[in-house]
Structures are given as structure tokens and as C-alpha cells.
Image (cartoon, helix red, strand yellow):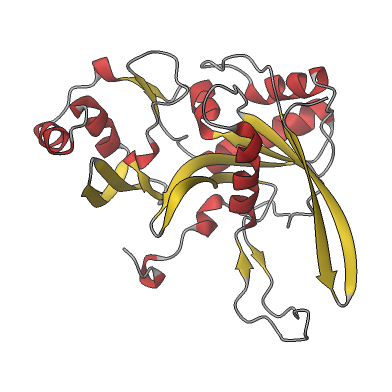
Length: 271
């Protein structure tokens, strides 16, 4: 039995018809420590076969950005970083390692907020998050940090195409990261890269249970799937960087990018 297999039963109501959808979230256990140059797609396929899961058409693979970046070599040794005077000043002010602050600044388009030891940045991709996504968790080496992938959508497409080549199966790939939220406590997983899936499901124009036409209903499905995957991926000693979500009829797209999830600045009420 798969230890981290979660099954959901969802009742869908559409045009008066009630259906039941079984959605499984399966964590891939036993993957090796991912290092630079590793073929992540191949390791995922081997791990799935070894676990008896067998990748299927329509699966959604959620992969933590940390293992994607490690495979792509986006790891920095802080001992190799010479912090600027500005980074030293911020480090002293925020009680943070100046070398880490320097790496964060290099990965940032702008600083959105600072305080309580936190630097909230807009990354080069346009995501707003703590420390520009620079992560010290699950990175081999005491002074190593991992950066976000240079282009998470390209990384997702590359993995998706290799999985199709190896298995013949058409899957969606989501690369995830853990983000905080400005008005709610706790962190959730969100999508920073997608392939084969439209990250937003537009339901405007559909009717609700009582026949009202939905006028404002755009569901961030890629974020919801990324968060669901975190139920089995975890953050500490589980060693599970990949989850397969099976049974969800996601909106398919060959062109969509995760940056579609970024709210335009002119519509942002909080920045």
C-alpha cells in the first residue's frame, strides 16, 4: 500500500446532475537525491514504475522547484558570494546573512516590503514572495541555497515532453513553490511553472445550482493542485519531491504559462 496515497470524493453539480469523481494524490517515494545534470523526468518515470503507479494519460505531476533547480544547477554556495555594502546594511538591519541577502537581491526585480526579518521581493519572473524564492531547505551543503528555475514554464515543458517520450503518455506538469499569503496565516504550495494545463479555469458565463449566471469566477486550478499535492509532498523528512494527481479533468493548454496567475499591478489592491 502506498503510504501517502490520498483519495478524494467530490460531488459535482452541473445542470442538475450529480457525479462522483475519485481523485488520487500519490507521493513518489524513494527518489534519489537530485543533483546537477540528473534527468529528472527519467527518474520520475523509473520511480513511478518501481512503486507500481505507472504514469497514465491525464495525470498531473506536481514537482517541487527545489529538485528542478538542483537538476538544472541553480544552486549557490554562499561562501562564494561577495555581498555589496547595501546587502551588508540590510543583513545587519534584518539579522540575515549578508551573502544570502546579496543572492536575494540579485534574484529580485524589486523589493516590495521589508520587516520582521523578512524581505518580500518581486522576482525576475514577476512572482511576489519571500526572499525572491531563494531556499535553504532540502539543499545538500550547509552553505548552499537553491534559486528558482530560470524559466519554470520551460522547465515544466521539458519534463513533460521527456515523460511523453519515455512513456507515450500525455500528462500535465506543475512546478511548485511554497508561498505565504498577505492576509492569512500559514504557507501553501503554488504553481510557478506549468505545461499542458491552463493554470486558470474560467467559469464566467456558467450557471450555478439555482440558475444564476456566474459573472466573476476564475479558479486558480494550478495553485489548487499544487496545494493539494503538498498534502503528500511535505517539507521536512518525507523525501517526497513529486506527487501524481490522478482523476482530475484539468483545462488543457499547450501555450499557457504560470505567469497568467500573476495579478496585473494596476489591479493589485495590496502592493
